[in-house]
Amino acid sequence: MPFVGRNALLYRAVYPANLTVSPPANSTSEVFTPAERCDAGETARVTYTYTSNANITALQAVFRWLNAAGTEISRNTVTLTPNTTGTRTDEFTAPDNTFSFQFGIRATSGTTAGTASASNITERILIGFAKSASISLDVDLVKEYVLGSDKPSFLASGNKSFKVSFDLLYANDKYAQKLLAGSQFDVIIAPDGWGTGKPLITLKNVVLNSWEQSIEQDGVIMESIEGEGSNIELATQ
Image (tube, rainbow, N blue to C red; front, side):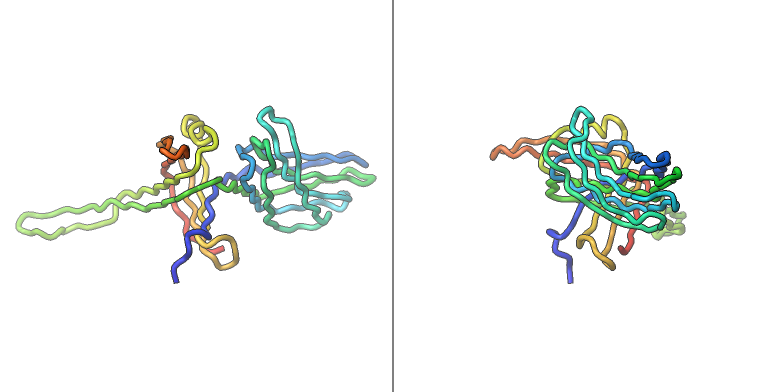
């Protein structure tokens, strides 16, 4: 049975470095990933592995929302169990006036300084108001013919290219700026939404090479983005 397109979700993903925090005795410290561009109404979905030692008495994962000036406007927290190791996926929706997002951990030490960390972090930001998306895998054919034959004597798979394009309602110049900066990120499509056993398509290390804005007669402003990645991964959640 074919998938219904309205179930599909489109994300861009980055993989920040591991986070480690070591609050002194009887104090609280927190540390965050670099800010990732995110607009109000977009969803940040983060997968991470957390751990801490026995000296940590309280531990939280933090979703931190910043305005255009880089000032925190709000946060969402997830309470974690200290002195354990676990892997979680959590997601929250950016509030009004959000310009960027940070993921972090917040830890409190007891009478002795402790250590906590988050590793294997994947930040997925839902691409807001996407109208359509297309991913293609193109392979060049290498063919050689010899005299007296109209059939190839040598036929092989050649260079591969992995292309992506998506159309969405224009909100700001975020993707135009990513094109100008040459930023790389993964594009992830969940064709049937999230859930165990459902397919997941990841286009790795995408660099954008085309951005186009259009204004329709009805006043709707659209943007079309194209890019190319280094590889494609077809997986099952």
